[in-house]
Length: 324
Picture 1 (cartoon, rainbow, N blue to C red):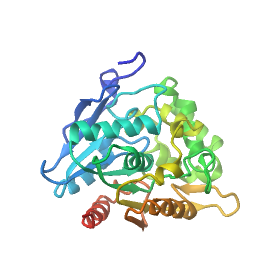
Picture 2 (cartoon, helix red, strand yellow):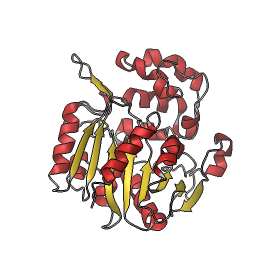
Picture 3 (cartoon, one colour):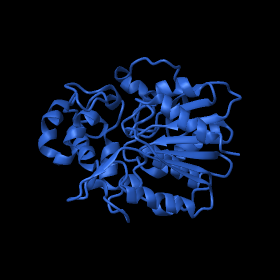
Picture 4 (cartoon, rainbow, N blue to C red):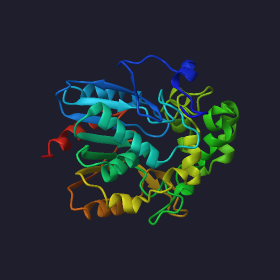
């Protein structure tokens, strides 16, 4: 391992037990943490979490989906029990890790489902993985275009969740090198633009927007390298991967879901993953590939798979039934 990389053993005090047995696979540069549940002969389904989320954000959904699928859920590099890699967080490295995981662990055509930035990583793998690895792609409310610093359509990172990511990077520091959670909570109302204030509890609490920020670090962020946040704010996460080009290269059937979103009519600031225009452009670009595209708007929170696990499982199962 390269100097500076942090293994799960170095952060052992950060973790708590979960419902399913965790495993590690050596992918070369990193060791990736994952769980595998369900009949090994069932269709393979790989779940790719959002920024700041470990595999266990899907815990309830795994329990439901494992009756129909062989379900794999992973921790991406820089999250959960997988290796932290300073200076190595971008779509190219995350996508290559997922491709290698499918190749080495799943070892057969796989339906890949990712939420938020995990959805962008899923699109990357659907576009650039070697033929035969990906059977279908499920993009659960991905921030296509909106997570770019200068997108071709709609608001970019500074007008969406970028200020929250900048807050994390400033007060927590790469690899939690600063770790001033109390200072961050106190600074949030002053440093974040007003349109993000309703999301403080959700982004820095246990998922209840009404509860406000937690007074101590929440579990899912304890397991997260805040350098991820810095990479998205600076544009490093997208370096070498243009969203428009990527979407026109997708080679498999795709389900694109679009969840709660609200755009300020005066400023264009976005609370949510994508505007309607950005979602429409993503759909248009996917359709240029000639592959089947299903666009499903849903009245659901951004991370639908956690609070609405049954609905999430139903959406996936119903769509997979349409695949040949």
